[in-house]
Each structure stands twice: as structure tokens, then as C-alpha cells.
Image 1 (cartoon, helix red, strand yellow):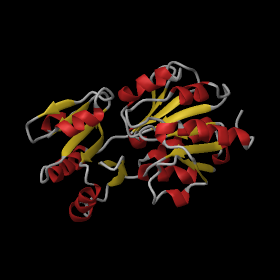
Image 2 (cartoon, rainbow, N blue to C red; image 1 turned 120 degrees about the vertical axis):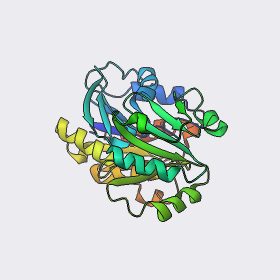
Image 3 (cartoon, rainbow, N blue to C red; image 1 turned 180 degrees about the horizontal axis):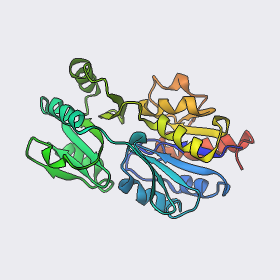
Image 4 (tube, rainbow, N blue to C red; image 1 turned 180 degrees about the vertical axis):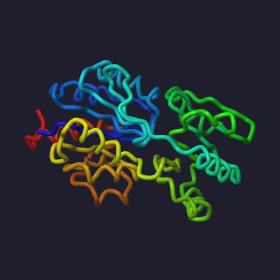
Amino acid sequence: MYKIIACDLDETLLNYNKQISKEDEISIKALDEDVKFVLASGKAYQDIIPYLKQLDLYGKKGQYVICSNGTTIVNCENDELISLTTLPFKTAQRLFNVGLKYDIVIHIFTLDKIYTYNLNQDEINYLSGTVTLTPFEKPSIEFLKNESIIKIGFTKTDIEFLRMIEKKDLVDFDDIDISYSANRYLEFNKKGIDKGYGLKLLADKLGIDKKYIACIIDNYNDLVMKPYSSLFIGVANTVEEIKPYCDYICQRTCEESAVSEALKYIKEKGLCI
């Protein structure tokens, strides 16, 4: 029986309107009490809380969440920080200066806020109602020098443009991990910190072997969880390059309650009550 089911949020559990379907909600709530349904997301903790509440996971004993691509792990029962990893300020400053060279949105994630430079209407529309942003206009992050910066993200709807930035400007950064998500985000964590790190850390803390861990995913930044799980399920809208790594591809997309299909697959295999 699977003891941890790690599930991505955007375009996996969430549809394109950032909502959890009623079918998925019911399927998740029907899981055995001993199963830990762990949301594993690039989102900050404060922006995941509404989804945890919808799924009755918030305030529940024995449930955890992996946030900001593994930089933050939180106990859902009491908001206890299990793990917090930050970027060195000098690294954050260098990344911000790279972003200033281009017409892109720059998000700086701290523990309780997302500070955003060069915010545009497209990003406002995309995140509408799901994320609280704190825009700033001065091209400097000196005001965050004494804050814990956990992640930085560049935003552009042209993913190839973001790949160009990586190849051109980030080759000299040896203290960060780079990931992509939602075909619009290029994100930076401290070296060695990603969703896979977060999943392994949580599993080790709970004493759960990888053979009891399943993942439900859709994108590039989810692939790092595969080495720490024994079942890797992609929704139908999973990025094509990632599909070959999946043990099972759902027939349904995130618009069609794919997570319910994934959970049904697990149950039919006798892997989860």
C-alpha cells in the first residue's frame, strides 16, 4: 500500500482556472486515513493553504506539504516548519540583475510574501485569485537583504526565450538548481534543493521507503521526484518530454479530473486503500 502520494498542483490537480474539481476533491477525501496526500508545488505555502483547506488537509494530523519546489516543508496540522532552505542574498542579487536585462516578470519568494518586479497584466490575469503578489518598482532588492529568500522565478510565456537566458546568462552560477514549470516559469532554488529533495527529506523523516511512494505529475520540475518514488503517474497533459519517464499516463487531462483517474489506477492495482 502506498503511504505517500505526492501530487503536483498547477495543471495536475488544478485545472487551467486554478481550481480542484469536485471529483478530485471527493477522491482525495476518500483516501485511507493512513495515506499522506502530499501537495508538492512550486507555490509558496500561504498560496497552497486554500487548497489544503478544500481537501480537509489543513489542520489534519499526519499530513504535510512540500512548497516552493522543495525549499519549504510544512506540517499541515500546526504550520510547523519541517525544513526551510534559503538562497544566499548575493546569489539572489545576481539572479535579479540577470532578470533586469530582459523584459520579464521577476518573482522573489520569501517565507510569507512574493515580491514582484515588472509585473504585467498577463501575469496578473494568469495568477488572478490564486496568489497574492507584492509589486515593487525600484530595480533593486536591497530592501530584502535581511529577509529569507527561498526562491526566485523569471516569467515569460515564451519558454524558448527563458531557455536562452539560461544558456546565455546562468552558466557561471554553480550554487543554484534550475527548473521550468507551466511553460512560463524559469525558477531558481539553492543548489540541491528541489521537489525530489523535499520528498526524500519528508520520507526519511517519516521512515517511509520509496517503494511506498507514488507521484502524480505533469511537468519538468516534477521529474526530480522520480528517483524517490516507485510509481510515477503523468496526467494526459504532461509535457511530452517527460512522458517517457512515467509508469502510467492518464487518459484524462487536468481539465478532466485526472487525479481521480490516477488514484483509481492505484486502487485497482491494490496499491492503496
